Image (cartoon, rainbow, N blue to C red; front, side):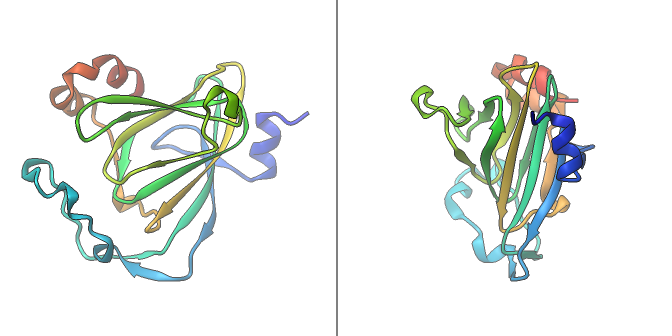
Length: 179
């Protein structure tokens, strides 16, 4: 039977010290692009919240395996590119999102389509989000595709105090998923 220990060894996963869980990059596109080429102007009406991107070259896309085990969670974070979460096996996962209207959403990632679980889900760039396993005695193996490709310079781990000031209505979520 496949368990988390087998997956960690088979896929050579490492601890994700920033976000939680385990990961391994399995693909990095050889094609390089400028991240400014894909600047989306839809957020520019919120000047106080606008994030500026310095010119930097990125791979067109990257892909990782991502594993959560038991009570592990993906801490609240955001990236400067769209991130597609793919479900592979194990327990379904809840992705918690704080959208640009400051409303909290929950998305179910899993393979039971009759229960409205999603096989994949796109978290749009600059969106605060986190994830947890639904069955805390199990594991969840997923994949995360980032386009333009992931770079740690584009990763922001949520700061509890700052998030509580900005989103006080989501105190429970922020307290649970910040480190």
